[in-house]
Image (tube, rainbow, N blue to C red; front, top):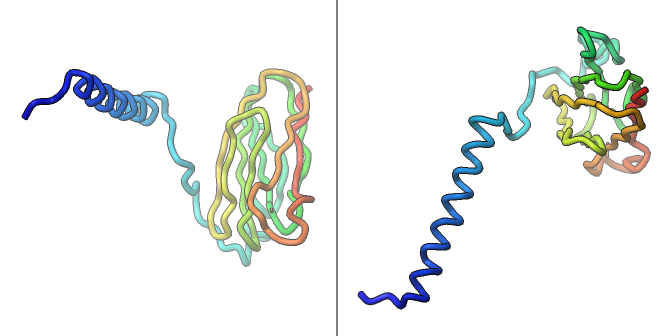
Length: 155
Ligand code: CUA
């Protein structure tokens, strides 16, 4: 079968684009640790308010410039809805919902997870510069969805 030179160039380009994509995904997944968010654990949404660590939401220091923020996402607020950390901090957020599906997206970072009843969501963000980083619920969760937001104040 005879293939036109012009057509051959496009066939080769198409294969190269696919190969670049596959190699890119491979490097991201295997070398750079990029992955789809998956549940960090299970929790019964009915007993969320009495199950550690969600019985005491808030910020805890876990090491030098390391923090853990336990946040409850419920219709229609985050608890707590503000945390404060020094610049250079790494914050691991643990999120859970006692009611419906919520979301958590933190502006200026690549933190972006779903908060699904029954699951614990975990996402980590590093804050190099002082400022205010707003987070919000990005999954429509009902009447008060637009009121679900909070912020990280970095000093
Ligand atoms: Cu919670 Cu939208």
